[in-house]
Length: 277
Image 1: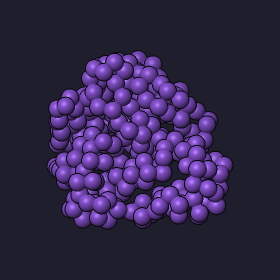
Image 2 (image 1 turned 120 degrees about the vertical axis):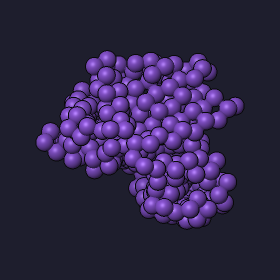
Image 3 (image 1 turned 90 degrees about the horizontal axis):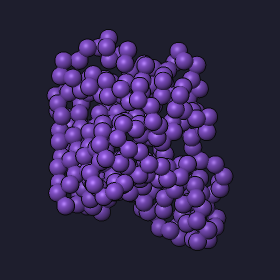
């Protein structure tokens, strides 16, 4: 089973998503910071520090551009409420905290008080009658606490292997561009085998998987800008709309059409998406 509910929130730069699912999510990344709470069941994911588990009441967190995946711990549904924050929103909120912008959030934490803050913020930004002052207070408390107590000095981003980095930068800038394995290896100045090994070591994903998730992120931005799904699929480099839809659902848990409904819906309206095995 798979149920997703995405909200338009009372704050620009903040998205809210609730999920209940047994689905395995392949390795992917987000443009935003994510902070959420496991509401039931258990979740296992691969992260930059290795495999981590989270159970009911635990906090799960992701950083922009950080590769991760996710599956049920025991094959039973797990559920969570998740908030995604644009980096600019985080920088603005933490401007008075002398935050240098390079700290990263740890993938999981067990912190009852912070879990309460996260759920309180989720409820505040999805309230049909939002209280701006209350939202601002809870937002500042939640983000400041997260980076003070569950952040790391480990800088985000990639290191080493300059040839591979050139390809990653190219993909990030032009995910719609068709690239063969041989062409990427040639541009990196290494053999195909060494390119595959180096790329996976740096990003945690194969070139194909990385390009696919970047195309999904581009399609998401195009849909949010009002592009029709068929045009978004072509502009994002997918072979056709059905190819985009399959990749979109695997990574984001909902169809492009449903996502487009969310971004065009009235403020604070929730759009749900359900499937069955």
